[in-house]
Each structure stands twice: as C-alpha cells, then as structure tokens.
Image (cartoon, rainbow, N blue to C red; front, side, top):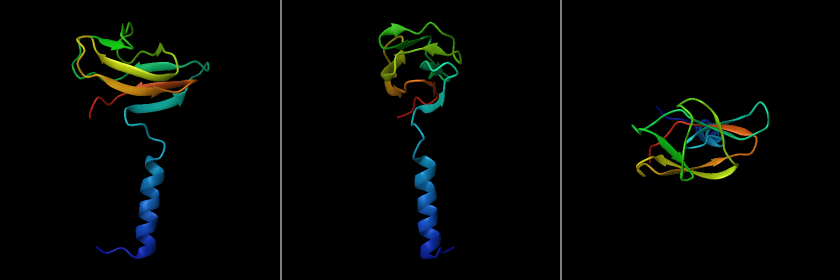
Length: 99
C-alpha cells in the first residue's frame, strides 16, 4: 500500500502528537487535592521498593505523597534502578520498568 505525500505527512503528524505528552515510565494525572503523589502500579518482581533511598511504605497500586521533581525508584536490593519525573500537583502512575 502506498500513501500519498499528504497522507504520509498527516500520519507523521498524528504519530508525533499522540506521543508528545506521554511519559515513558507511566502517566500523570492531576491530583484531587493539588499535592504530588506516586503510584507504583507494576513491579519487576521486587519484594519491596525504594524511592529516593527510602523504603516505599505503600502497597502496589496505592498512592503515596512524594516531593515534585526527579525521583529515583528501585527494588530494595538495589536492582532495577529507574528515574522519573513527578510533576507538582500530579499523581504519577509508574507502570514501566523496561529499558
């Protein structure tokens, strides 16, 4: 199947727009109270998680307050270290541990 030039440009524009606001590690949504939260929605098999060097006290899927800014997440044993951005006033649902 061949696309015309306008069809190709439209397809490229749609792909760019659809990915423009997607975060690699998850998605952010406005929090109900304006505070900043993290939800760890997926685990790569960690017995427990650590956020910014401190044990994460919340169960998987349960939001917990975090400071806005760049956060560091890993398994308690130090494996699978990942960084992500927690935006002020948002709930960040972390769901991708991949590369």
